[in-house]
Length: 136
Figure (cartoon, rainbow, N blue to C red):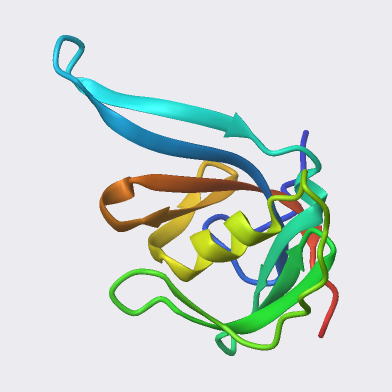
């Protein structure tokens, strides 16, 4: 009998780890579905997001600490606040991660994970739970 570590549909106070990026690059008329580029994120534990009940968020963008505020009114919107700006190296996805978060307009729980999307679902970030976040 498995015990869920999170309440269903609860997204706050979880260490979300960025696992997958799905980019819709076009439309396949024959198959009637989007053409998607799916990228598995190396080291998801280096790209985290913790949403707090008070509308604040924090996390990691590889070697940088990020924080700011978010709103779930009419979608999901992130406003980046103080962020360290260290250069994390050529392989890092830190800049892409920050750019994606800045462009998010929708999101919410899916399955046992959490997803965020840019306008029209052009880009979808999928997160998995890394466990319960400690108090801030």
